Length: 371
Image (cartoon, rainbow, N blue to C red; front, side, top):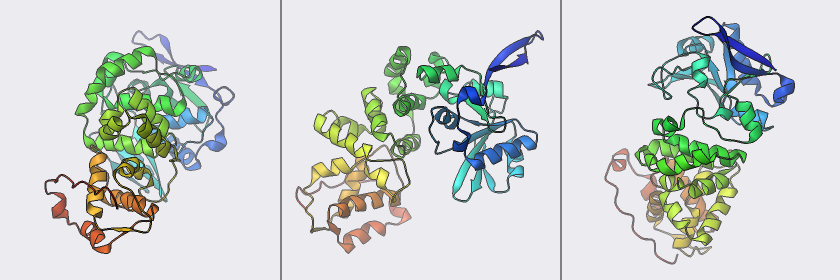
């Protein structure tokens, strides 16, 4: 174990971070994505301090193979773009770079400062960047070249203790960004870690802050949940903590019935986090609800697809998924029951124009009790 020092204002050296070697952090280098390693190497070769960061490092330490690898660097977005021709700059307030390798995307961010608080969108140093991250287990920096983990916030110790511990003070972390409450619970469910009592109490007292979050951000969080391999565990814990009612209020209301809750979570548990047919994960959000509306008789056909579609879409509000994905998910649900869709009914939905999208939504008609 080594330490990283930096100079204080008085000129004295201050211990800033613990450096764990490969023998100490236990990361299996074979589980580290080769393209992510290549990106870090090229950035460092160009003179920019760079690391793999966040959930990927956490998962590697826990012996899991990450799905995504995020990278952070001292290089500005413009300089990153210059180094990687296969990339583009995204974002308005805080600009990031997406580096493309075939169908795969690697997100490269520049170190952020604390100039404007924990949600700062100004560039800074690694010392500042680590202190605006949310939880200690997500604030570890991995250098694949030297195979070391740089730990500024005792994140390694909290992983060993199996704790989801905030970096930002509790007086600020959820008021600055209420979505962090969802993430805290999600991380606990995904890892099996515990939320400290004071964090639980703060989430309970401030859960109403989520009512101000835009549907687009909530949609993004829901997609992350249903595309994980722990969707059932996350939904279950979010509901117990009183947060699922902000993500899926209709489902949360029905989950008060133990029978529906058991069925809903069982459906969620079948999601494996892998890329399957379009809309599979999305269908898990409404399929148990549609099951309660009708008696789905195999070998029959329906002509009210639009009403079924509208009911499903209303049920998942405030989530606002892409229309194509939602239609595909509803079609898949219906055909899985051996029920066919009459072509005129299907064309009525598929032929919707852009102008129709902007019309005021009408309340969907109730579905007939028997198909």
